[in-house]
Image 1 (cartoon, rainbow over the protein chains, first blue to last red):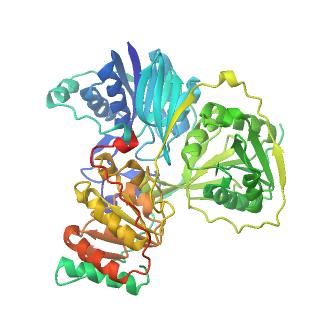
Image 2: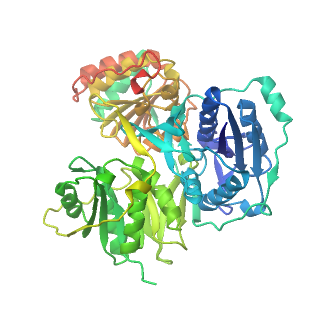
Image 3: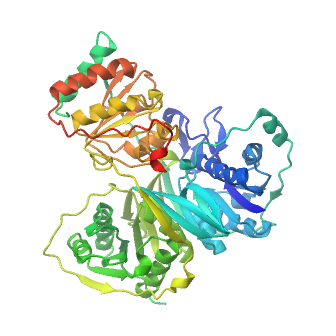
Length: 260
Length: 352
């Protein structure tokens, strides 16, 4: 039996239009626009998919762990609908506004408490703050090896053979278990849960642990300011009698501007 | 306790050449060191590191270069690289430690920061010394580039950051500069290193490299398949440019992953960027908003890309592109070599 923990985060849909994106500079966070959805952070979904790919071939138990507000239970349930076995929510006012250090600390404490895992999988970076250090941080706190930006995982003789995506290709790395891996979208498209599975998962109880169950750490990084950079509307629209003419007019324009 | 002092950058190189990120790190490191009256050092880790690399680091601004050179460091593994930097930190006690936001830096920096019990900010686009606190103020895009945040690390040393490629211009190369080169042995136990690199797949790029290209043609979700990329390559050939893509075409297997431009793909800043049938999601914009001139062709006038574009055509790209390519062919002064076509017709076999 292979034991996998997957850490996931619920975030504000990153695909909301830039125009709808607003922040609260005092609270230093984004204000969700009306009707904006809370979704699983993209790469965390890739991490769930990576765990499911292992489960496709081996007897595997997948535990999903999320640190966040009560609403994050829906994200955990979605992972269960995709094929994970169980989930746990880490939620406490003391965890709010945790930076990567404090987040990794709480997750590592929860993982220690949950027991022995062969793999701990995380997304390569979160889809809101883009910090990109929680996975490596957990590995360091647990004292286990890590490989980041994984596009493929295979198992061989109690070891994992993983493909790490680097700027000019891939490196194939053999790593002993237990190991922490951070996963990118190169793992392939995440599977879509069936309606039946979504319905079943909606009934699953998600236990919650708070600061009484797990230790808390102080944040290391202090945010001084958060602001939205100004974007000026300056686009010159090239016209034509028809799209074909607009196309050649565009080329003429670029030539006049000495750009081509 | 000994006082921490100095700025150290973790340099990178390929063969005997200093990587561009190294001279960029030296430029921003030089600025921080000068503002706080400290020394700037560089460290290189590898096996059989060329003298040319260490000399160039001095020409680009380093006063001292530490060389950690042993067969153990031939392949990159975070156990050995983090371990080496941990030992160097103990030895030289820097106040500030900077890495590139590269495959190496984004892997090393968080593990090293946790091990040294300090904070790190990844993917910074600017660093400066805060006048009041004298701490390094670290500026980074968040929410996929929709917002910018500034951070400091009050407790925990060294102050650490990774810096995005092309965020800083290198200083002028000055071959008359001199500096000290110091070999450092971190004394790591080779047996204790976990993991090993057992293979490598290099993606060969025909023609101009995407990151280095002066003109970039980028295709998006609206291309609806791999075939239109042939047209994009035709245009790239005429303009001596390179072809890239947003995330969707890569996920869908229409083109290889190394085409991807964006927060999690390549970060580019060409003179001319032409976006075709793409909406300009914040994730994508984070990778290309540094382009000097942005051109967009999209049939949706509300597409985000028009918000940052200089020139735009609102129409079906299929109707615009052939006449645009033809006219570019007539007018362009940039004609380059035919850069070849890398269309993936059957899945992602090229990456396997």
